[in-house]
Length: 282
Image 1: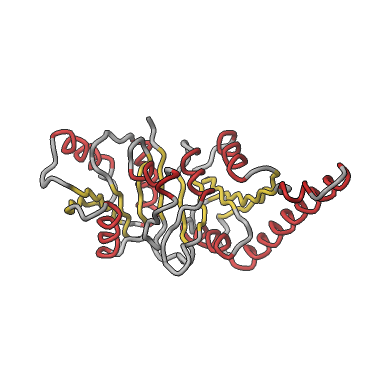
Image 2 (image 1 turned 90 degrees about the vertical axis):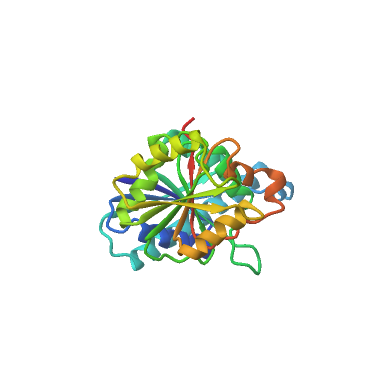
């Protein structure tokens, strides 16, 4: 049985993420763990005089968290008919990122599915501070980022962006293969090149990847470099109507660059489709 962790802040975007997860794993046995974290904010502590009042404030935010999760379970019961799905709720005190790190470290999860709102006035992913910290700090669980208003559509085309510059491990590729097999989807490997031919290392790695994907429909796509890597990938996504974009997060990868503090404040990655980030195995 798959174990899926879904954090929620009770927003519309977070609810949409739960609905997306239910559809993505339709007819697949899953335990969904819906997590809400809470903490007394520093400003609230400043205005609170006694330890008794602090305790009372803690009880209030804890109850709000528990009541919110109870309402989510009721909404799930009213919207689902998949008997293969089991839902459990978790209310924990502490910072969102630290709680997530501890849970993934202490319990096995097959996937984290997290929603993130698009930037104002544009249909795009903006990796906010919590999301980018999760991607940076959690290195042993795949993370699926679901943009705001990204409603589920049947997954038939999966794009896997790679430069073929490194050897990929079977454990890194397994989540992509499983996703493709569950949905009978085609995996399209994208290489954005600045030279027209693969070198010997790239050719070896592309051949190894083909062996990993031999059980699913797959194809290679080599496209010329645009002004930026982001624009090249975006053009490919639009042309082939990709449903999910996949990348592996390793040192000096696009994901690693995307989650640096200096860059994240300046750029958004323009895509309205879900974005699967797989941690490197080395």
